[in-house]
Length: 68
Image (cartoon, rainbow, N blue to C red):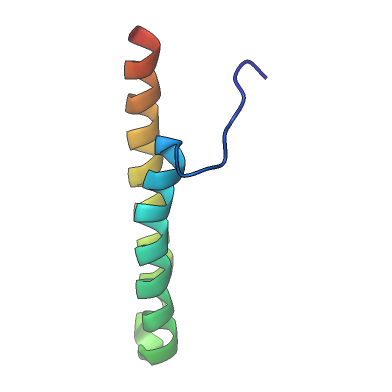
């Protein structure tokens, strides 16, 4: 491990993770509990999109941080 990870809201990566994943979890839960049976793929799709957005942002953020 080259760098320690700080699990607090002072860490920008933790804050962004909560900003992206918490609304995704809430919206996905609403679709699971109140959605029709034919739309059960939507929560999974939302989760995949949210993970993709977060990890793309994280990749560019760490790349920018490493350059500085």
